[in-house]
Image 1 (cartoon, rainbow, N blue to C red):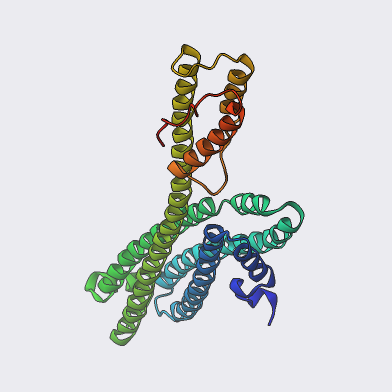
Image 2: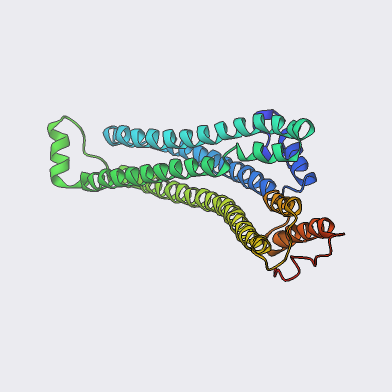
Length: 314
């Protein structure tokens, strides 16, 4: 099978990237890549089907008996085909970029580790790619609606073609009045074209909404992570303040520690509190304070003081 005909999900680079993400427990990043891959595959298939239907419709338009109306309809078909081609180009560009990046990203973990792998996937800016597709398909849907509206005007003109005034006009132009069966044939072709424009517009609208939902989901997951990190930082700051107040009580006499070296070391311990990966909220703070409690107890051993953190709540 030629590479251009290969589904994106079947590309070796994509398969390898998804495997590497799974091995490194980056489930969120894997889901984002899978969502984009699945979307591109599905939309490429729909656009190919739309183009085939439009090509078949062009052949019908070329057989219209009223050549003037036929030319105008052919122009509308050309506009619709152009929008479909734009959609295919947009997806093809995203496909090429993703395949190219997948190969580089898969090798990143071997050279720089898991964090670099996560940042490399984020650099793909999958939500932004989906948002651009959403806007592109929205414009395509609107273009199909405009084509349908213009076709309605043409259909009305054709409907009036059998009237006396229309026939007289054709006679003055040296043309024979259209036969009844020819009018009906033309009307049938235009009705099918109108239905195709409506169908394509609906499909583009569905593609637009699909891209929007995926982009919103990806953005929501990132916002959730940012919110959790912000909450973690706030909790840590609060615990730092409480610890600082407790250490200050040591200085003011609640715990009679007069040894300057010991007090200085306690304050240094407070300054050295660092977050621990994979822990969050109270568990994170508890871990930090427990570690400080241990260090403090060791410092106070031999000078006869109780643990100054014994009353600290977490």
